[in-house]
Image (cartoon, rainbow, N blue to C red; front, side, top):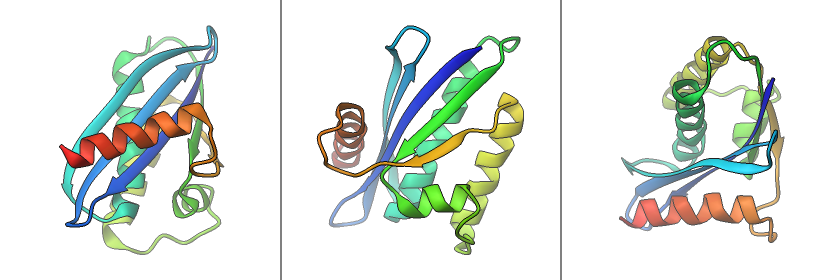
Length: 141
């Protein structure tokens, strides 16, 4: 079994430009598997937070050995994302409902039911700070 710890973040600038940051750590060897920073156009911060998870799971799906079982832990500083994916919040915004559906389809594709964990933002956690850095840099171009 491959164990992934995934740190995601979204960022939105003053004029609406948004970016995402993803850090994927392989817990089997405690190393960073990959980093992703991506500009996603003019979006809300909540869209960016959800889209970061979509991109993380897509990348894991593309890179993994399809025969291996996986465990995925998603860590995010977005309360809406974590509670929404854990079924504690009813996501209603149409764009977020679509992203949540994409995420759930990726769960099926990966044959994994990721855990979603809320982490405190800007508290000195290196992986969270790296995801934030990647999102901010991607948003800024």
